[in-house]
Length: 211
Image (cartoon, rainbow, N blue to C red; front, side, top):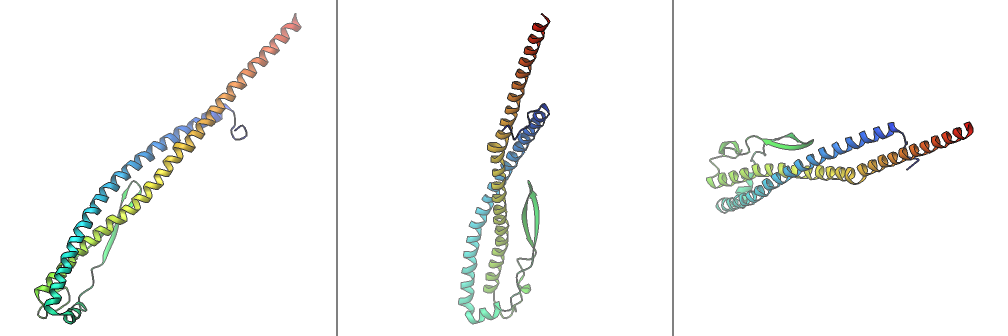
């Protein structure tokens, strides 16, 4: 310790400043961690609800598809699906939560009208329209679920990183700075005592010589 720390009053002042700074940083990081955890649980509930709803919609979509296949036959369904227009493009934007960029996925016209899907209305039936609509509704939920699960992964990563920083300050950096400050105080007190004893010795010697 003696080789690592300068035992001066200036060093003690700087050490105390570093301790205050570390404690302020510790407080802010704990607040950040708490906000991130609250956001995580809020989004996790949304994800749970979305998964449940998506499972239900996908079940209905495949049931509608099975009905359409039974009505039209597999070959006719394959012919129709071959001309169906692809899914619309998506746009990914972000919002900032305590320094974490949370993705926000947007798309337009996930649900289309019968004439916008690419297949002929005359050559199809309401059964196909119902199946297509069911899968389009499912697509909207897939995008929302992808958004929430991506957000959860990013939040978990940031929470863990923030937690490590809090622990490092809590158990390593702040105690180490406080030990060093305490060491400087003890050494300064010891130096003052040595100086006081030295002065007393010199004074006694001078008085003896004068006598």
